[in-house]
Length: 337
Image (cartoon, rainbow, N blue to C red; front, side, top):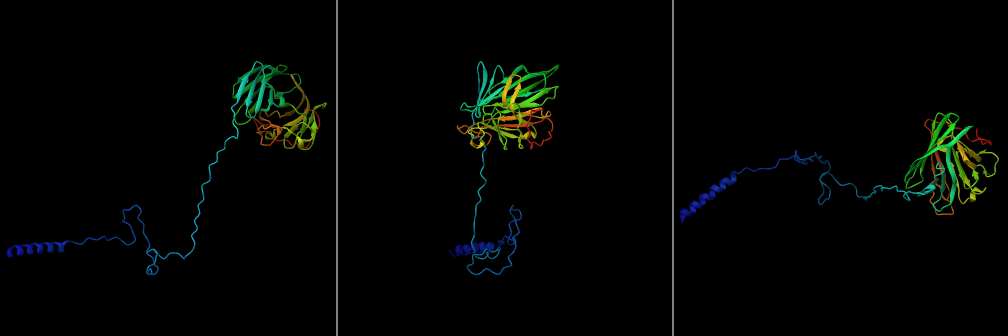
């Protein structure tokens, strides 16, 4: 038994010596830094402030700011706005034995098959605002509307071309309508040929009083056309000589062209005859690009021109070349040259 105790004591002594000989390992990292291979390693500055007081809530890097009120605000992101048409109606072509009729969101546009270069416009409620409208060229001895061809007649596109001759010279006028589901059609008229004749936009309207922001003129019974060109190159046409109380109106606007002389009175060209408003464009304007639409205050029709409760027909003209604007502030009376 004493030998066993002595052997156990010897083993314990050896183990104690081994424990005392194990080296002590410690991390020796600089204060205030992360390991050098850490992706967010930053050098933190040592604070030069006084030691933290007992039970302080300050951070080791320095004292907290002076007591105060923290105000937090949140600014929401700008909302995404979607610009959608207020009304979308698919255009429908109804071809009968006598005409092409386009029913659109802006009203009804019809083209008689015996004179397919003419357009008649009426509101969706059936009120006729334009009896006939087209584009012509004029010259002494001219023969209009020869060799008329309907080039396209689909739900979205209508195009017609007619020839004209002056002596041995000839040319043609092409008129097209591109129909849309969210507004009035885009209309274009182009003149081709050797003759440099001015394009004329002629409109035979339901009403016969024209207003140019200076005076109202009833042109139904005039003996000759009167120059009614306004300074801003836009006209309105309505039923009476009191524009403030018009229940419907039609507008002609060619201000984008910067030129064009407007007349009201008797007009005759080929098969067209009667009181009308017509705009004579300079000869260098070989293409005209208008928009036609309308409504009236007596109905719930939509006014696509942007003028509430009015009947509108807006024209924009573009030239193949640059046009020099003319000063139309002086109004004169007489026939177009």
